[in-house]
Image 1 (spheres, protein in one colour):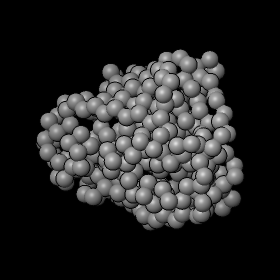
Image 2 (cartoon, helix red, strand yellow; image 1 turned 90 degrees about the vertical axis):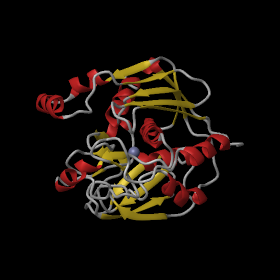
Image 3 (cartoon, helix red, strand yellow; image 1 turned 90 degrees about the horizontal axis):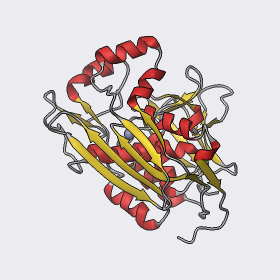
Image 4 (cartoon, helix red, strand yellow; image 1 turned 180 degrees about the vertical axis):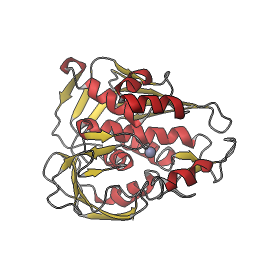
Length: 315
Ligand SMILES: [Zn+2]
């Protein structure tokens, strides 16, 4: 197991509610990543695992009980913990959302990288069979009313999106594709391999970690009025103009949009509870698809094999 060497306090505001939140990433001897809401009396430890994901709407991943103790927007933090090899920690938090900070994984990475205990290999979950989830499967899982609303109102619900995982022996390979019918994003793809080596971590930090999520600026006022996106600003989110042909803030990379997808996928895949070894292909993917993929993968024991490793990492 690998944990943190001391309590690491991280404060900021949450992405949706925009309220101040304090989080402490604490050393732990128990395997797994757990959240604990300190503002809720007798809140129990919430394991950050795929089977505990209770909501994936609002473009973020939420764990816990839907209307009880839960924590939203865990994905960027989960991606950073995974990259640092931290597979054991208790995260105390005094609100319902992880601090959004710079909207990417970079600041979280910088805050945590110096406090990683001696590394041991993480438990590997090796994919043995191809598993796929299509957007059409996802829509079928929504309650009837949401299904109708999604079809009528959302421009983004597409039926040709999918996320797939295939066997791949050299680590976690991610191929993400975005395909938007607009000038500013259009079709973008990004490929990233994490094999546990320092080189693959450096590749992430140098080329992916700073990427932010995006949204249409014209929708912001409406979204904020409805209690969402209040922690978003022109530093931590890419804002796109009303015609969807230009950004209102400077991009770190022309394809920053799809690079951010890789962060989200890494974070969501770490809710598998270890180092998932496989080839993830995401086309118009989402947190909801990622979660359904893991649920399907783990629903059949012949889809995967768990390899426990206790030796110290040589890398
Ligand atoms: Zn994200």
